Amino acid sequence: MTTLPGNDVTSKTAATQRFSVEIDGSIAATFSECSGLAVQIATEKYEEGGDNGVTLKFQGRVDYTNIVLKHGITESADLFDWLLRIVRGEYARKNISVRVLTSDLSEIRSWQFKGAFPVKWTGPTLNATSSSIAIETLELAHEGFVTV
Image (tube, rainbow, N blue to C red):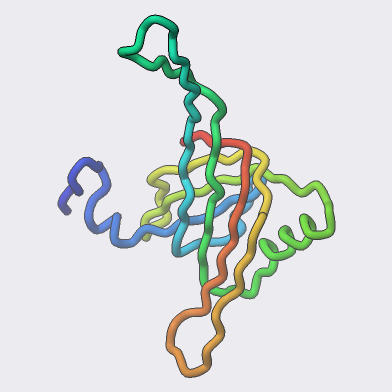
C-alpha cells in the first residue's frame, strides 16, 4: 500500500472510508458524505494613531459552520424524529461524534461536537426512471468541536 502525500492514510484505506455519527454514545447512522468541519475566528482591526504602516489585529469571536451529513434512505427515522422534536420547540441538543472509519470499521479520526441540533433536513429526489440512490441531507448546528 502507498501513503498519500501529506497523509498517513493508505490509498486503499482512503478509497473505502465510511463516516458514522454517534449521538450520545450510540451509532445513529453511517453517511456517504460529511461537510462543514470548519471553524473561523473573527479578527478585530485597530488602527493605532501615529503609526500608518500597520493595522493591529486581535482575535474576536469564534464561529463554527454547520455540519452537513448526506446518506442513503434507511428504515431508521431516528434522525428525522430528532428534527421533529426541534420543530415542536423541544430542547433537544445532543453531543455527537463524527467518526471516519476504514472498510474494516477501524477508526481513523473523530470529532466531538457539543450541543448539536438539526436545523435543516432535505429529502431525496424521487425519480422512478433513475438508478441513483435516494439521498437525504441533514444539517446540524453546534456550539463547537474538538478532534479526538
